[in-house]
Image (cartoon, rainbow, N blue to C red):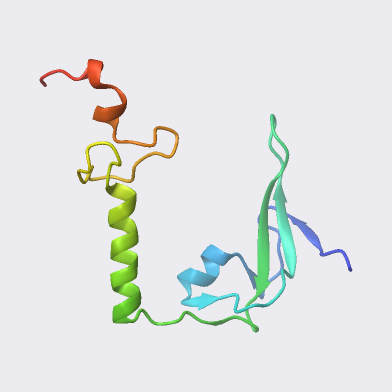
Amino acid sequence: MAAIPVYSWRLAPDGLATRRQLRARGLRPGGQPVAAQLERSRRRRGPLVAYLYRLDLAKPVRPMTPGRAVALARAMAARRTCPECRRDAGYCIPPTLGMCVPCAYPSQQHAA
């Protein structure tokens, strides 16, 4: 396996983009391998890494179908539903708590 090129932050050549940049242009990697990576040094932890993909090999984003929209809405509703009280919390339940904030900290609830 050949090593991929590594560039410093903001110094990648034209024609390469991150997943987020591809999405902003209405594109997706489309199964292509990583073409290069960006590295940005950080003081306390290892380098921050972003993978780059070739723009000329990127494919258009697949359109949202009615079935996919329904599935996405159900998945998001499941992320908002507290397993303890079974209510919609109005936000995604934090995985660290595993339940809504009022259920996780019942003794700290007071009238606002």
